[in-house]
Image (spheres, helix red, strand yellow):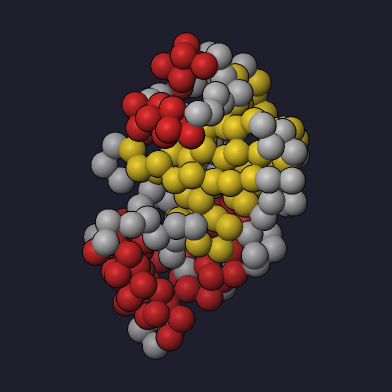
Length: 239
């Protein structure tokens, strides 16, 4: 069995992804079409699926052009069907999607948006989590509540430590610098920030991270309860 993930920078600081499984591939959160098309052409691939984690334009902006060009079907949150045009399959918590030799499970993670979802493959050890969990951070709470976002992060924190985490933005360095103000003596955190600085200086992505790394260095995931989490999120929002 073969699979691979390709990271595609889009817009200012977004990432879209191509996940290949056997003879099929899916595009995840195409904020714009052209960079994705260029990579697909380079790889000589035709996507059969598009996964959207939530309705924001910087995650769905390329949908229309990709579906028109390739005939890919859009899989997106059922609860956001009125906010994402032309969804082919609305999915909910616990639904499974087969892609080639891989199976993805849908995990509902409200907080950033009310209908936000993540796509997780247990056998491939990969998680596409949009704007819920970031490398050393988490998404802003735009539509949900702090408690909802906390519960969503707890769901993801229960995944196996070896799970590769692919999130929606290149926010690692700013997240890490904030985290250092909270846990300045966390050696693992300091090392990750230095690594992130080196990668960004070379123009390279800091992703993927892993669930195991996040448990050691993500102050939002390490909060002891929803109250502490809400306080940290409020502090980060003022920066």
